[in-house]
Length: 334
Ligand code: ISE
Image (cartoon, rainbow, N blue to C red):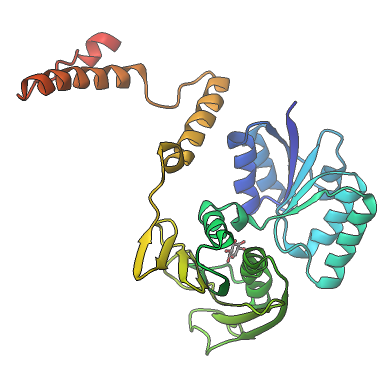
């Protein structure tokens, strides 16, 4: 049976999740969305076959909502998370969990009291294949013990509501989680310093920011967060270990420096190299089939390729160029 999902907050990220749940996620169905901008919620609901509910707490309580995605701003998360716990609804909550440690701890305690883990936080880097590969490499011990992480986290631009505090709570929080996850350790001290800010930002916003995290076990991580970089969205991470380093975010997979060389891994076989393509192929085939449509290479594409291969075999045997005999497409398909 399908998981019926409701989404609270359909701004930039929530609308993206709505699309994902409705069209790209198997085993799930989008049933409801909620947003302070009622028109926006109604538009998205109508397009994706869901309904719009004005009050987010009503959406969370709705009998036909099995699970909730909270993509609302951080300052309403606490109340909405408590409502999810109260109704026993599993929830994927975008970061930040809440606005401060005290309220976040109350959420943790309330969940613990229920005796059921219902809350997942949107630290999505843990699902990024490059971060996963980096974690596997570091955990393998091949490079020795990891000593330092260097992180770069840049946005092209952000809305003017994105002030200095959000740069920490909404952006830097990803590197906070990455450092905790990669080192499997807690951060015990943080220093955040700021250079003279870019001139391309509203008065008073401290951007970029440089931070240093110190971990319980003695490792350290640094990060540059620059949310008005103007150029584009870039996230990089280099882990420096005893016998080498590994960098991700270059668009090439993990780049490893070790033994006087610098290079990228070569996958062992096609399933690894094309994993994403196979996943997309099958999911889109299922989705299109359900819609009664075809959404990929057609029988004609197969025929055209076969005709080329047939000529190729002849050429292989003779060593000569061979003309490809292809039927007239319009004649065959009208
Ligand atoms: C944004 O709010 C996000 O959640 C992104 O993950 C983050 O990388 C970005 O800096 C934020 O603006």
